[in-house]
Image (cartoon, rainbow, N blue to C red; front, side, top):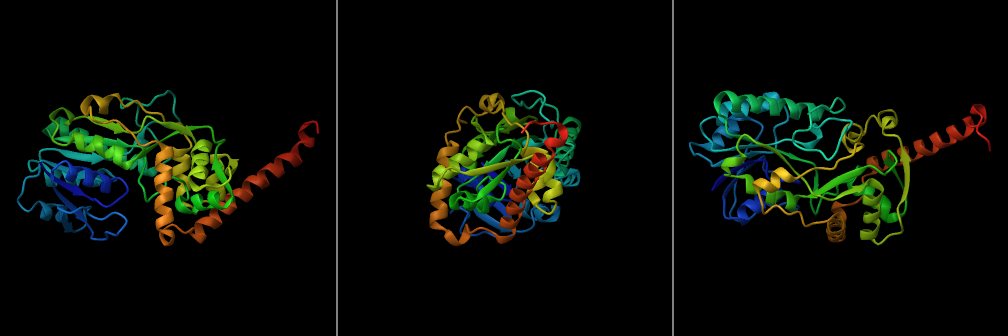
Length: 346
């Protein structure tokens, strides 16, 4: 099978490229050439340098060839999806669009989430862009038979990228025993998926006639409360139990409007995320997530131990995380000061 990946060195895409190559596919990757030792392109994979978001670069990568599947990790809106339909119609056997599980309705009304759960996320522009892209592809499939498949990953990580707000800086705070602020009360269940597990499901969809026209999410079956996610980090790091404090998610835009994670937490991570994986298992029986968060955290810690220069805390991120901790304590002090005024007995 001939497969073209648009983007192939990211957290999710690198594992999918590796799994595709392992299964014997003839793989081409279109990237900007900014690969690193963290996620090298596997031997035997053809790497083409170009902007995968540029339709002209995609057309050039095709270069008269017909790929059995094109997998796009870098489409974020309706304009991007329209451009892909224009370039690829009649030139590809299957187009796999990587969307996001953040498109599902927030707040969650009923779980577990299925592919039929309505798409509605008023809090996150990224999710709204992904919804618009999906709608373009659905229309193209209905009107002209464009052979699309939509994949919705949830929160996915690999051995070099921890799935924590604040990433390695948050990990370092736990390891050194500093306080860390968890948005909400820490009890909301959240699903973390290792990229190697997701790759089995995604690659199994390639060239699958029954997957054309379908939309599936691919996630782990393990959902853990956020406080437990951080407790597992402490165990993997060999540190004392984490010193966690909690702050309502709604306060994040006020306390940390400059932090990239604020919108993502408010629009996605603060909500319960438990998924029904019946659809992907029906299409790809080989999909069986095997990497638990405990195992994944140990793998991340091993990578951290081997790459200290790449996993040092970022001072700017540390300052934001400090600010959140201070805000939580200030809020607690303010509430305590109000207690007599509202008639709370001491």
